[in-house]
Length: 267
Image 1 (cartoon, rainbow, N blue to C red):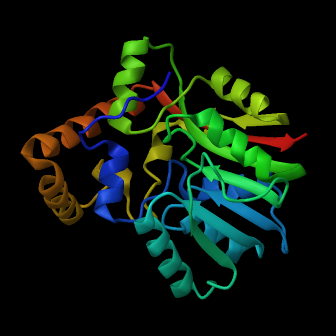
Image 2: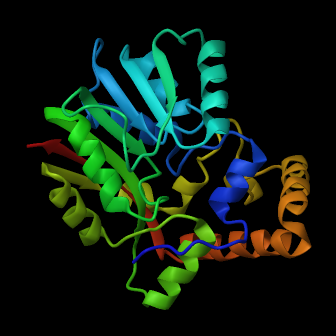
């Protein structure tokens, strides 16, 4: 299944438009677990694919003493990530580059670990993203991702509906495993249930109790973001963004949509 492009703001669009820092389900606990599984150690050269505003890359560098290259297709994200690294005082340890995850600007076999947190499914060709991640990893290196994964059998129509509103393409658990193997990974391990409970989705803000408010953004942030969405998409787009949010959270709360962490080793 491939997500079709639409001209209405998806959940991913709204997050980017807001300019507000958000993480992924599981928050920094999942970032820590991902880094642990990838075996990050001081001196390693790590690629963070689709690095966003740089939160994970900065965390790897500060916590594990690794050198990190982050790539993202958005100039806005690269600018924000570079500024965040500078504010953290580790801009000499982390470098951000503008690049497409489906065509990485690196040679074969050059990174000690390759990680993608929550962005393999955003481009239409998730397999190409995985293929590129494995290509640039050294033989024997860990490649780790975590991604939205269907928890219940759903019709193709319902999957397409949620995917288009979300702005990314969740897959079945077995589909992810098949794609990882096709990309050239072995010794694949997966952690699903512990990252799929709805409370994990409330951890996407570092300093805010999302579960209590049942909203990712505060009232002020929602007003600010709504104004920006309205300016770009008009009233129809703003109403669509609110509708997409409701459908997305229903899918999470009803146990249809979860989250899975995968790690494999390059042949």
